[in-house]
Length: 180
Image (cartoon, rainbow, N blue to C red):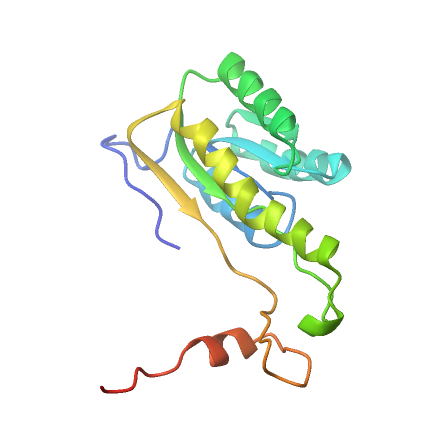
């Protein structure tokens, strides 16, 4: 992973910068938080699972950085407002936003996927990312970094009769353009 560089001449290029990582309690989000902490970056960790947030915060505490572990549901604008109110109280600025919160639906074909489950995925993965970014932009200074992680466990293909597999979105989504 290549991390953004600051103009600081310290050995840790992100020393004293502040990063918000949504979905930071496991997987890619936790790995990103670990990499940022290793560079001396202060962290705001969010997720819906308070116990997992406490575990992640304890794990990263040895990095001698400031850590704010704040529960946040990116589907809920009030939860996002509360998060940014807390961030403003604890940190002078926000330099990096990593939109990593995301969920996947059950491994179902389109004809069997209930609409409320689909809407939950869209609210979390797209609308949540949008609303968090809006709130962050009001607090970030010019030159800040925003990373949107749109990875997923699998993708839907409405035409395929069999259930999608982890790579089906990659295969079905990448087709050479035909010449006209």
